[in-house]
Length: 69
Image 1 (cartoon, rainbow, N blue to C red):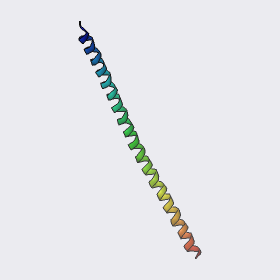
Image 2: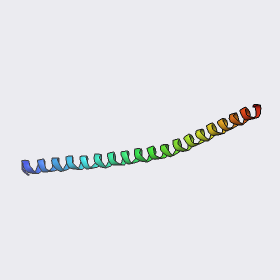
Image 3: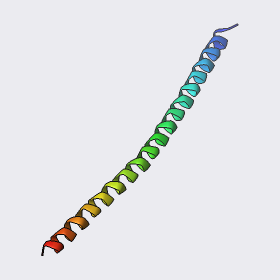
């Protein structure tokens, strides 16, 4: 066994570790992207609900002001 053989094995071990880390990193960012999309949907629904409540409030206030006039 020569020096090249050990170097080749070490290099292949390094490449294997890099591949594993890249795969784990890709999976992590894929999971984060999914979580962000899910949160964005929830925030959108909450924002729509707040807008609806604000519209209802403004309509009720306008109606009360018209009743007083």
